[in-house]
Image (cartoon, rainbow, N blue to C red; front, side, top):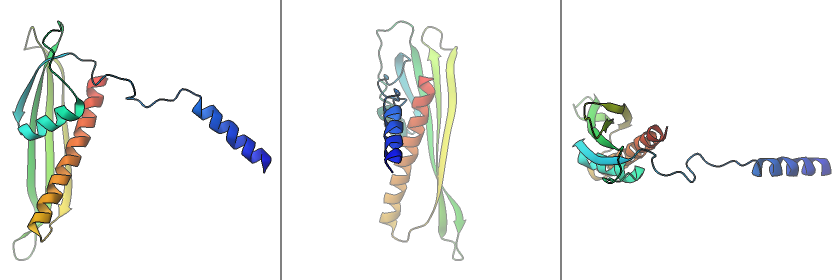
Length: 154
């Protein structure tokens, strides 16, 4: 019994003092200097993503980039019941991120498409359905924001 406690204590000490840190701890939001941020498409989705990532325009840096965010949110009916009413919905958020050189806008530094979707059943109460759809949208935006942040930091 004492050996088990001693072994557990040693393993605990070894793991806690190994220098483990979360990936994003102490890192700046992005190591890419942004000169200008341009939104195309759903401005609400774009603003939420920029707020989540924490990007800010900085016109004073020399070798910086223009960031273009093109987003689209779609809510589509996947299935209908016998009477023709929607029974299953699908919410999809597509975001296209492009980083262009400030000096030559035809040069693309990085580009990537991010797309997430979620399928869910209809709720009879329309207010509850709207709230549920907003919640789904927020979660999809958070997940896309995390993916974009990881993409920009690599």
